[in-house]
Image (cartoon, helix red, strand yellow):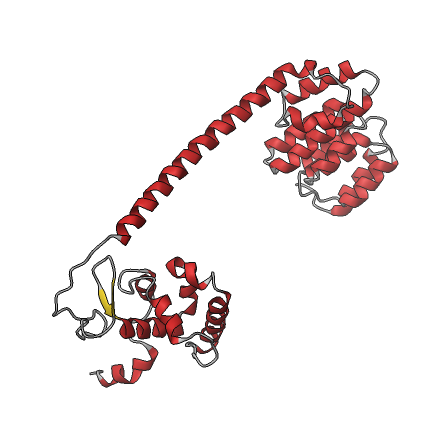
Amino acid sequence: GEVLDPTVHNYLISLLVKQPKDDSLIRFIVKSGPKPIYDVKSALRLCYHHNKIRACSEIHKVIGEYEEATRVALKINIQLAQLTAIEAEKAGVNAEITKRLWLLVARHVINKEKGDVKKATQKISDILKHCSLSIEEVLPYFPDFVQIGGFKSEVVKSLEAYNQSIRQLKVEMDRHTETAAKIREDIDELQNQKGFIPETRRCDLSGEAVLSRPFLYFPCGHVFLEDALTDHTIQQAKRRPKLLLSGPFSALTCKESKLEASLEAMDKEAKEKGSASLALVDITRSEWKRIASLECPLCGSLMIASCHESLILPEEKLEAESWEV
C-alpha cells in the first residue's frame, strides 16, 4: 500500500536532493500534489541548500505559490518561467496574479537584453502572443528612447481593442440615455396625472370619508387620509425601521442625515426589543408625513415586506387567544 508516514517522505526528499540529476526529485514533488505529506519548508530548505532550483520552483508551484515559482524559474531559463505562468492560467489563478507573473517574465527579458533593444523587442513581441498582457503594460519597462516599430502588430491589436471598448461604451451610453429619456417622460406624465375622487370615497386604511380632511391620492388609485397614512407608516417603522432606509424611502431618509440616524437608532432598538419606541428619535410629525407620502402602503415595499409577518401581531395575542375553540 501507499506509505503515508511523513518521516518516510521527508527522508526520501533528503536522499533525492543529493542525486546529481533532479529528475527523480521533480517527479516525486509533482506526484505528491498540492497537499504533500512531506514537510514543505524542510523540503524547500534542502532544495535551496543543494542548489536544486528547478525543484524549488516545482514545490512553490504545487502549493500554489506561482509568483515565487516564476521568480525561481527565471533563474534557470525564460521558457520554464513562461511555462509556470501558463500553468497558473490553466489552474484558474486570479487574472491579476497571472498578469503579475507575465510582467515578471517581461521585465526579466528587458533587463537581460539591455544591450540589445532589438532582441528584447522581438522576445517581448513573442511573449505578448502567448499571454494576456497588452503592449501598453510592457512599454514602461523599456528605455525611453526605444522605437516601437517592432511592436507594430501589438500596437494595432491594442488600438483595435480600444476601439471595440469605445464602441461598446457608446452603445451603453446610448442605452442609458434612452432609459433616462423614458424616465423623464414617466415623471412628466406623473406630474400631469389626474384622478377622479367621488364625494363618497373613503380612506383605504381607516374607512373614513376623505373629502372632509387632508388626504393623499396615489397613481395606483388608492386614497388615504393624511393622518391615517402617517400613523400607519409610524407603526410600520416601529416594527421594521430598516425598511424606511431602502427602496423609494431612501431618496429622503438616506439623504437627510438626521432622519437616517434616527431610523438607525430605531432599528437597533427594534432588533433588541421587537419594537422601537419613538421617544428616543428626533423625527417630527411633519417629517413622518413626508416619509409616508413617498409610497402607497398597499402597493409598495411595506406591503411586500408584510408578507413575511405573522397574521397575528404580538400585541394582538390576547385577542387571538380569546377566539380559540
